[in-house]
Every structure is written in structure tokens, then in C-alpha cells.
Amino acid sequence: MITASKKKLLDLIKQQGQTNIDGLVALTDMAKTTVREHLTQLERDNYVERSYDRSGRGRPSLQFKLTTKGNGLYPSYEPQLMRELIRFLQAEEEEELLETFFEKFWDRRYKKLELMMETSHVQTEEEKADVLKDMLDEEGFMPEYEIDPQTEKLTVKECNCPFREVIKVTNSPCRLEKEFYTKVFGKNVDRTSHIRKGDFSCTYCIG
Image (cartoon, rainbow, N blue to C red; front, side, top):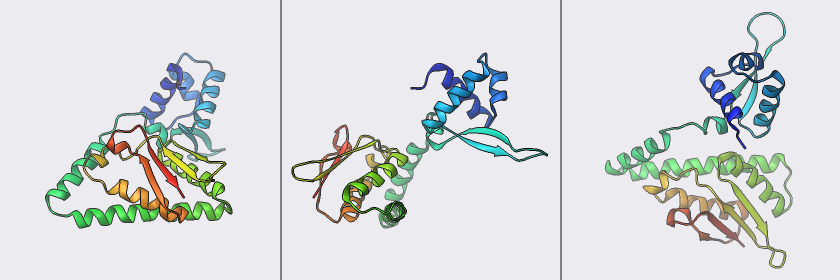
């Protein structure tokens, strides 16, 4: 949970790009121990990360900056801009170029997952699902999965769509995501719920 005092620290880090504990203490009425505790919690929740300023002599200075997740707390026009770009390409009859872009994007995702699975020495389907969940978490899908103990079928639910604005104007991400699951697990995949159609999640039943 991001309390008002944690949000204040995030705002200050956002404004300054990066800063240290003493700098945050000087700009707030919080005790140093409170600032340190809040930063530890924010780092654990992946809103901030450490960096080191090596300018000057002596030991590098410990700094904190926002992660991608932390920056995501602030307004962005990028999704709307992407949607307008897609509309422009469609109006200019560049659908083939657009499709190539999405296909290459999903291919990079698949190769990234392959590398993650190789690094984790994946052996079982459940281990594969664990690695997939880690990647989807990182990408903002808010994934959940379960394996039916009777049928051993895997169900993956994506509770958030990071491409929510994009899928308003093209179905390509939805089609490629289903193909992605088929390629990852080598099994038939049914999508039983679909955010683009008004459902609260995209659910994929595998096998």
C-alpha cells in the first residue's frame, strides 16, 4: 500500500530524478529512520531502486530513483499517442507494416521468455508457468495461474492489459498473445474471457 508519506517520497524522487536519504529527510518532516523504512518497503515493492553516484572522491553515494513501475504511477499520454499512431498507419494503408511491428514485438517477448526458462533450468510445465508469471508480472499483466489437479490443465489469467488503448483500434495484440501461449506450451489454447470484449481479464485455458 502506498501511504501519503510514501507517495510524498516518490513525488520528491520523481521531481529530482534521483536523490539520497539525507536529501529526502531535508525536504520532509519525516525522521531518517522513517524515510529509510519507507524506501526499503518501496524498493521491495519495486517502486524504487538503488543507484550509486560515483562523482567526486570517496565512496560512491547511495541514491534512489524510480523504477518503471514507479514511473507508471504518474500520468502518461503514451498509450493515447500509440493509439493515434496506429490509426494514422491504418489510414495510410500501412497495415502490413503495422502487423510486422507487432509480430516482431511478440517474437522478442518469446525469445526473452525462452532465455528466462533456460536460465531457470525449467523442467516441468508448472516451472514453465512460474517463469511465465514472472515475465508477465514484470510487463504489468497482473497474472494468476492454476493447474487443475484432476485434468492437469493449466489456466492463466491476465488481470490487466498493458495494451488497453492499443486494442481499441487493432486486434493484433490479442491474436498474437493467444498464438504466444500456443507456442510457449505447444498445446491447444482457448481464450475463455477477453478484456477487449468487456471481460475483467483475459483467461487462457491450455491443453
